[in-house]
Length: 141
Image (cartoon, rainbow, N blue to C red):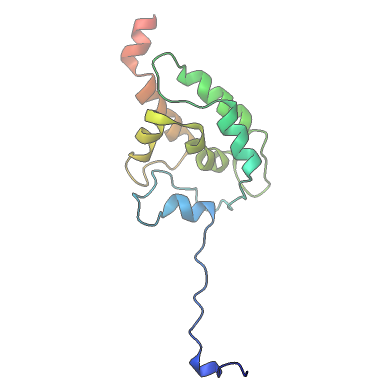
């Protein structure tokens, strides 16, 4: 049996870009992410072992007995083990933060204004404004 002539073959559609930057900046059929990876930063390959370090290390659900400052400290500590000459610390943290959230905190993060988080400092402030608001800080004094 002979193969069909080339003119009878369907065109091959190339796979879409499935990089982390593409997934964070454009989700198919879902609300766009609040995170925008800084321009000029290369994307990095996120390995399952790195995701496991985050998800098994210290997740945050937003429960009242959780300490958001401690969560950020632990999260940054884990991210600091992942270094890349072409990816900034900010970009690594921005790319990985959603993996550290579960439950209500994850839902809150997914519903932030699309493309509103462009720096790690902005993400930290937004997170602490939600989970350690000024009124809560005043009560501790």
